[in-house]
Image 1 (cartoon, helix red, strand yellow):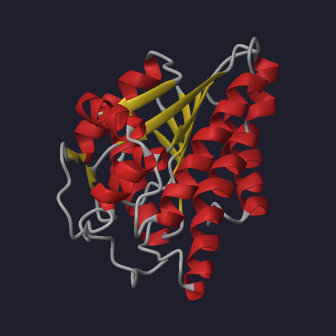
Image 2 (tube, one colour):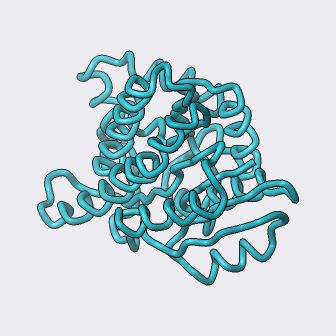
Length: 253
């Protein structure tokens, strides 16, 4: 099996890489932090091709995809997992730069990762393209406007790609996790219901991918919560969430 996966230096991406790694698997691993990337690759069985790059650099990403295709052929699975998060205030113009950075990684990076392989997979008539979105994209959560907006955009983009590839033999899967125990969530100052360990989340995500589900909210308990949250009228959503604790705004991006 040939898999190309972004955002693997820690958290969910690392857990997914470890889940899929085997003596018979070829992994294309992408992350910004070269030392962590190389360390991960050395610890995994099978063949690993490492690409130290920022997914927001679409040209670097295209070169990595071209190298993977030339060396190993069309992947069976591409997972656009790379993502960042930071607290933001929609009423503070100084946070506009944070918004731009979050959108570049979480939306542009996801789009470029999948687009880099979609033509080859369409020509082959097979394969699965996966985007890691989030339940945070279902509503505009206070203090998380940039992250919520990026994940809403990612979910919509993935739906467009799914329709465009309809009938091609290529599946498009949208994964919307709830809370996963990763470095990105450990800074949160608020309760995180149904928190999953990264390795458990990776197993559940892999099952959803194998089933080629169009959209999967993980865990199932969060799927129920998300239905309720989306059903709330705007005035009630505002009343319930206006005073909730928020993600720190001083995190590195």
